[in-house]
Length: 333
Ligand SMILES: Cc1ncc(COP(=O)(O)O)c(C=O)c1O
Image 1: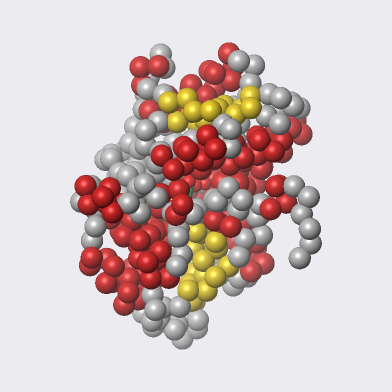
Image 2 (image 1 turned 180 degrees about the vertical axis):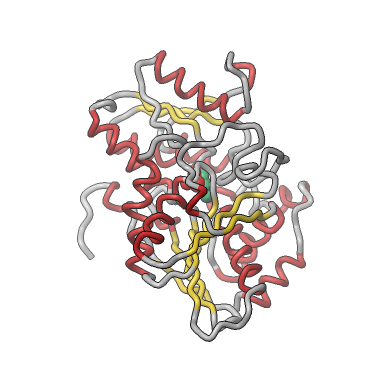
């Protein structure tokens, strides 16, 4: 194995794992993005955004980066800021699991918790977070990289995640991923569509409102967009062949099943795609030709230890569902 010279070189080229199921006519492959150094596919976001900002001259040595995040983008920006000599402040709210926030602090980043009252423009808390990150960057002579609207984010996924999946499984029939800013699935999905014959399935948490103006609260913290917030420009819905929802219960019980039964410690959006893949295949007729599904396993379960992997938290929130566990056990073998 070649010797790597810095953290950047550890990002990407993640493994693909085949997951056996009872259906031999469908093959499920897991693109294990938690092998990235900060534990999620958002390492690709941070790398793309930072590289582009440095190249344009907008990001200069010693500057402070301010970014609004549900946790993972901030975690990886904190990591790369440490390795490249920048200061970093994550603009967050209480929706982010404490494990992700502690990781940001562990990399030497700072946290700015925001409230709706803080922003004169008001709006949804996600919009407030985004405005505050921009405002702080302006006031303090720093920079906001804007993972939501900056086209470098999906482009980074097109050039790396999409290309890698195509090289690993060129005949992917379906790519299943989740949507927050929409960058990871829009970028990787575009690559697969341009180079092969792949259909894209986009999932969001039940209650999230990418495709509907109404929604309700949910505990899933990575993907999703709450009702009333201004949608990010980076999502390209025209690429999606199908769109659906997965609930907190389905996602969290699936995370726990894979940790307990398969030794795979994965995050909330991974629980969503693993649950949905089972539901989707069960609804499909037997196929003569083998069909291949690739699932984006976006992050590690280590970011949810005080959350979905905490029995007391799950019981308190009435999220334990033994039936989901049994259903998964009959499908994933
Ligand atoms: C674990 C996880 N999965 C999925 C997503 C959604 O990714 P994207 O913002 O590229 O749509 C996020 C976003 O933060 C995430 O942290």
